[in-house]
Image (cartoon, rainbow, N blue to C red; front, side, top):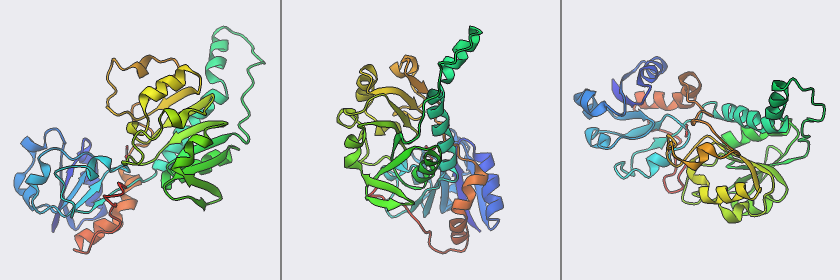
Length: 314
Ligand code: OXD
């Protein structure tokens, strides 16, 4: 039986799900903080598969036969750049139903402002009937989605259903599912008149702090939502854009440092909503379908498919 190690904060549920998905594998798991003391080192030395979120320091040295790393999420920035992970080992990713989760997150936060929910709640607290609190008409408003993979596309469909005009930004321009996808470099021009900017691109050398001062220079009254990676956004530029009204509100689910340090200015800025990296939870029953084929391949000793391109970063 081939062995697969799980190093994950929620390892018991993943071990159970992986065993059920492919009973021909021997699967054992440990927490990333305690694996070094608690793991069965003989098992690790034999294991060829690894299921993990972040790769703890020293783990690859304990796994000399490692031949496959399956990430428990969509973004693999922390793995592709990991100095201890030999370049020959395939890394695969999984985004399960993140598109749906993140579309709900985006729509929820976008509508909170458009439907003036905070003002309505405030009026209710005063027992005030406020007929002038009309919802904003989002029909024809422009939403720009930075990152147009499976997640971005699902988000785009949800926003289109609400009447918004959606444009994607990605490395390769194309027409996809009726959406115009433009090159990332065209982002700054698209900010003119845009109502919403949603960041869901992978973090790569090309996307790191791509949303900076020049990118936001033509924005006005924008809702900026980040569900991708904190490092996609230059936070000093965001602060300036918030203070000058180019960005009306920032809804941030991801940060360069997580948990967000308690003294960070983002916590108390009146136009910022901070959420705890919860927009796309990875749930075994939603993620396993993405990785089932490779689990079977691995159990049968066949090559893993769909490895990320390390040079590209996703
Ligand atoms: C992911 C994440 O990349 O949860 O999957 O951030």
